[in-house]
Length: 118
Image (cartoon, rainbow, N blue to C red; front, side, top):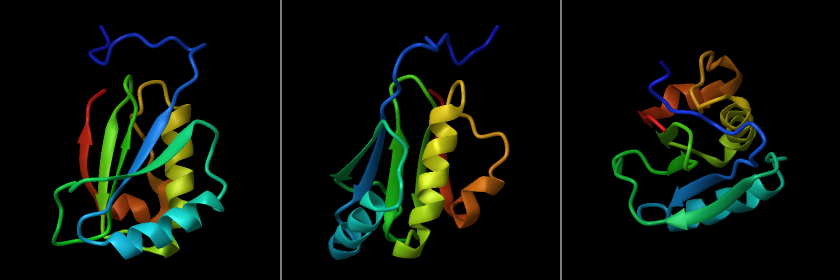
């Protein structure tokens, strides 16, 4: 039995990309602008959030959907926008958000802080 639960393949998945606005407010704003032109897949909503935890490694971001695994990354820079877009596409295209092969995530795979089951 799949411990991650059923998923309706016909449902449109929304992926919330939250940028920590606590430790790096200016960096978060700059990255938000870069992400808007990075070719994010349909269904990605970019927001600023309160503290995500890894304050010693700003800038942090979280990827969350109600029915899929979630991720927190830290040490993000504006140069990571293409890798962030690729990671969003992987999460959205997977059945439950679990990324089996993280190589397409580029440098982002080295910045993973946490993965939460969906």
